[in-house]
Amino acid sequence: MNKPVLAIIIPCFNEELCIKTTTERLLNVIEELVTKDKVKPESYLYLIDDGSTDSTWNIIEGLHNNDNRVKALKFIRNFGNQKALIAGLEGVREIGCDCCISIDADLQQDENAIENFVDEYMNGADIVSGIRKNRKTDSFFKKTTALLFYKTMNILGAKIPPNHSDYRLVSKKALDIMKLYPEKYLFLRGFFHEVGLKTAYVYFDVKPRMAGESKFNFMSLMVLALNGITSYSVVPLRFVTVLGFLMALFGFLVGLETVFEKIFLHNSPNGWATTIILLCVFGGIQLFCLGLIGEYVGQLFREVKSRPRYIKDIELK
Ligand code: UDP
Ligand code: MG
Image (cartoon, rainbow, N blue to C red; front, side, top):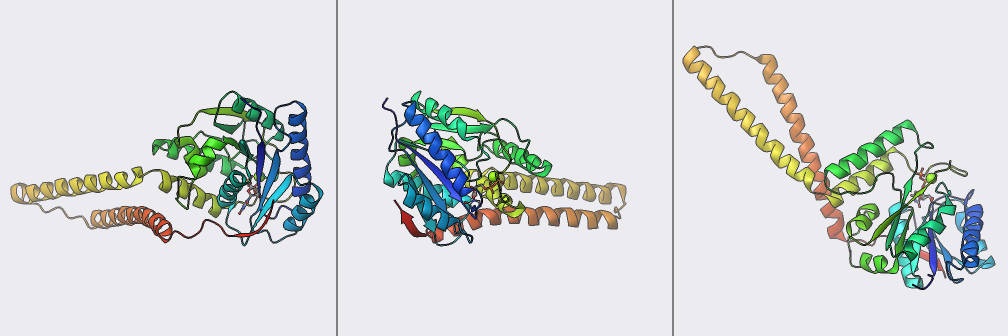
């Protein structure tokens, strides 16, 4: 196989403190790989400014003017990390590359692992997923919720590798296949795992954030997880059906028992507390299930409107 043109995709949202250092380090990585004759010298960086409100874009423009290997795209407003990644993947496909890697702007993911990604690509993998060796830098809360999410996803049938953040290499072939998926709320981790291309794994170290703060909060992580689940699995809907059936069966049996006691034992069970409890429990379960179905209706609602995934403002090629 010929050595590839590599594109490195970096989503940035208010990363004025990191972006300059990150760009320099990644350009260094590219130069090293060129020296080692592993990638072509036309390899480049592609930065997506996800509607930053600080000076991120100004810095990016400066970097682009200094070095044409720094290419960039600016969103009109913030669309979120997944959309920035999708825009990155679509952008580098248009500009042209043989494979691309997405990495966070804070360089929490060890950039020296990029060489291993490229090696796996040369060995014939179309997708190389980065797996974090540990979660030392995460809070207890994030660790637990992440674990819960991967477990839930696996039970629901959307088998995504645990501890995989969006640090991954994908080949041109995978990019072409992505074009065939018109869904607006594409969940990248699920998608790349599902397509069935040859996949390899690279283990890497996680560092603390270089500077600035995490751009994710509890709500945005919940939204990501919920979208991951409802866009990749209908098992929760089946669960609702089964639960409804079991509840109805239970009600029927209790009814039979009541009639039996009334007719043959002549005692009508008095159960004020029982009635209230059952009312609350069943009322709660019903509302929960309704909400769950609502999530899928919401998913449909958003997809049917089929609004653009993101809106470009400026592109520097
Ligand atoms: N990011 C983005 N849009 C957003 C939030 C985050 O493009 O709305 C980018 C951010 O600039 C970074 C990456 O997504 O490059 C991961 O974000 P962060 O490091 O804040 O997340 P964490 O590592 O804490 O999960
Ligand atoms: Mg980070």
